[in-house]
Length: 242
Image (cartoon, rainbow, N blue to C red; front, side, top):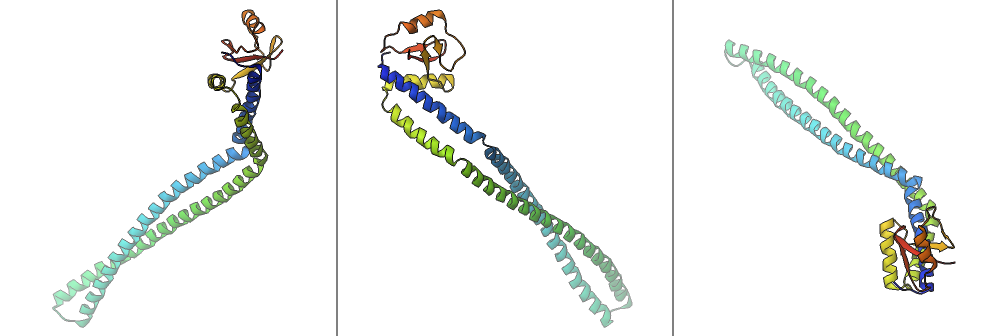
C-alpha cells in the first residue's frame, strides 16, 4: 500500500486522539458515581419487584377480609331475624327450642367470624405497612439516584467537553486521510483492541516494550517515504518518523 508521509503522519495524530477518546470514555464508565448509580438502579428494581409482590399479597388479604365480613353480615342478618321470631313467641315449644339452639350456634359462629376478621385485619395492616415501607425505601433510593446523577453530571462536565472536542477533531483528521489507508487503520484497531498504528523512532517502537525481529527492522529502515508498512508481529501499521 502506498501513502504519502503526511498521510501516514496524520494516522499517528488520529491514533493519539483515538487513544484519548478511549481514555475519556473509560473514565466516564469507571467513575465512582457510575458504579454507585448502577447499584442504586439495581436496588430500585429489586424494591419495585418486592412492592408488586407486597401489593398483590395485601390485595389477597383485603379480599379475604371482605369475604369474612360478608359472611358475618349475612349471619347477623339471619341472627336478628331469628331473634325477632323467638321474641315474638310464635310457634310451638319445639320450634322455639330449635330456634334458640340455632341462635346459640349462630352466636358461636359470629364470635368465630369476628375473631377471624380481627386476625385477618391484623394481617392486612401488616401487609399494607410492608407496601408503605417498600414505597418509602423506593422513594429514598430514587432521591439517592437523582443526587448521584447530578454528581456524575457535574463530575463529567470537563470529560464530556473534552470528549466532544476530541470527537470533532477526529472527524476533521479522518476526513483528510485516504479511505484505503483509513480502512486499514480501522481494521488493525479492530484486531488489536484499539491500536491501529505505531511510531517507529530510530530502532524503537514508541510506547511499546516488545521489540521487532531484526528482519522487520531492516524492512522498516529500507522503507520508501510513500510505503506503508503493516507489521505482522504487532498486527498494525508502523510509521517511520526518524
